[in-house]
Amino acid sequence: MSQATNQSWGGRFSEPTDAFVARFTASVSFDQRLAGQDIQGSIAHATMLARVGVLSDEERDSIIDGLTEIQGEIERGEFEWSVPLEDVHMNIEARLTQKIGITGKKLHTGRSRNDQVATDIRLFMRDAIDSIDAELMRLREGMIGLAEREADTIMPGFTHLQTAQPVTFGHHLLAWQEMLARDHERLLDTRKRVNVMPLGAAALAGTTYPIDRHVTAELLGFSRPAENSLDAVSDRDFAIEFASFASILLMHLSRMSEELVLWTSAQFDFIDLPDRFCTGSSIMPQKKNPDVPELVRGKTGRVYGHLMSLLTLMKSQPLAYNKDNQEDKEPLFDTVDTVLDCLKAFADMVPAIEPKKESMFEAARRGFSTATDLADYLVRRGVAFRDAHEIVGQSVAFGLKEKKDLSEMTLEELQQFSDTIEADVFEVLTLEGSVAARNHIGGTAPDQVRAAASRALEALKAHREAP
Image (cartoon, rainbow, N blue to C red; front, side):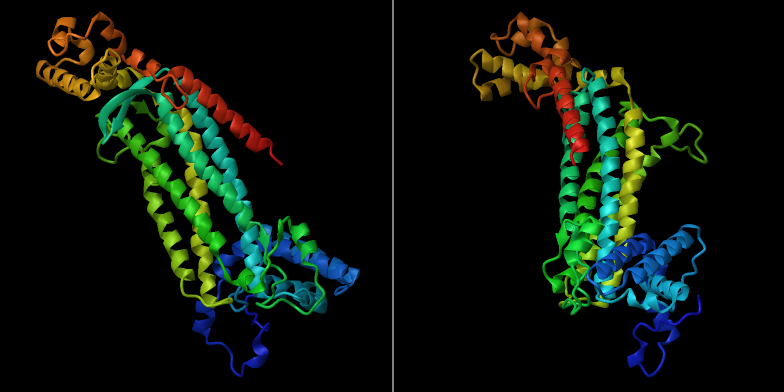
């Protein structure tokens, strides 16, 4: 079979395709990955053709039996893929005809490789999205669980990577979770537009055979057939939309990775990652490198590149199908693989993060992280905010000179900047008091973190139980 020649379109040509051109234009080396979806679509197509009387029941059964046997050959690694047969579709059709005779040639009635490949890709994308959905669920559940456990763990919150205000580690993790929740919504919304069936559009104009596209759509689990045959075979905006989702997701995972890399450093010393997610150095025996988050951070650029590749691929194509679209598969396949690998790595790693609570607390105690609390205290006592801001700024300058945090100053030292300050000020200058005071929805108070974690888990449960 490896020496077979593609006869699906050869009648019009007076000479064989150049050997280099055959290799250059063939896609079977990578689109054989669509074999399962191709067979799935062909079985549904044959079933529909029999239902409308284009095929007999015996022909349908022979085709389905043959395709099922070919599926087994592929799964066992026994199938011989042929470059001269160009692509996954013709390789399978040629093998089917070899197995069941002329009936195999009837399978292509009422369809084209144009609508066939568009259908295969959508089936592949739907399966990929469902797998990514499951990994996102696993990651979010692990992240929420860790946030709930660390609802009381105090750490510094940053702006400009400078200590800003104290927050809880649980609150920080739930910020990550919110990013992923939006990504999850984008993924599920993309699935709606992926789940539209091109099959029946044929080459570009539909077919003269009495096909029933609603039957085929129902057999394949599509929500509906595509409305326009020209659009159905030629656009890949659903793939671009998926790559856009993937780019935003990887951007978020990259931001998380950056923080994990910082937090594991000796300079921060906020967390420890288990050894199984790290590697060592070939020359420096003390090193423990956070390779998993570093690699996820690095793979982000790869996914961005695939998005740009797909956008560029489509930007100048006239209707309808063009050979350019053969180039959609490799970036799409690699995007799916990269997203799944990164999500799996994070879903395994995040629940295993071990916070170093004392280091986090000590870091939050440095850097005057309760300065805003002191300003709020003064405002509540009638001081105008801009004046309060000035008073606190003077207090911080004094602390820098004396190497004292606000909470370490005496009452007399604080009162030299404002006689409005009284002994109860120390209730707001403690880290525990600061985080507890943010006791509203979206705030960092431990009770709010636990409530937010509970709501997030309920939302995941509702998604899992949805039909």
